[in-house]
Length: 186
Image (cartoon, rainbow, N blue to C red):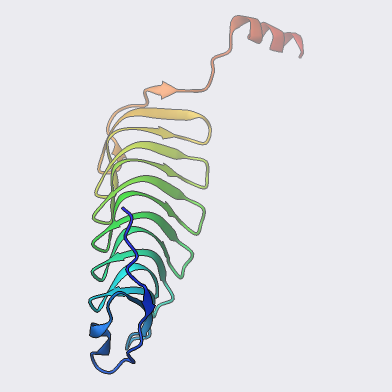
């Protein structure tokens, strides 16, 4: 979703108690009481268009806004180093997105109401990986779990737990010729 940019001029009102409510079709900066700062487009007294918000806790959002809500495409960076890049609807991660943890793990896939829901891939910095469906942030439904060793599980997951047995081992089997060749070199 691309949000049209309405700002054609700088907002000129200074903030009295409610002066920002008169800001429309302009670009301006507002510092909120708790210390958060928004800089960007305004329409009808609301954040609307493209802008950035630095929150009082040092988290930061840059991207699209509609009627005061994060809606469209944006990047949210937490002060702890985590980052989300993707779609928002009404302030929640909804649509396609990627989440990067500061420790090196990452998720690429679908979100609904701020939770991993739909199809996605979760990569761990240890080399493990899960590809499949998620419901409310948990591996649920069909999926494949890959260990760093190459072993994999293909099957059902329920509430994040494998609900079957190890079905596939992707480690290649040695052929008879390869086994003979290995023994000959010893």
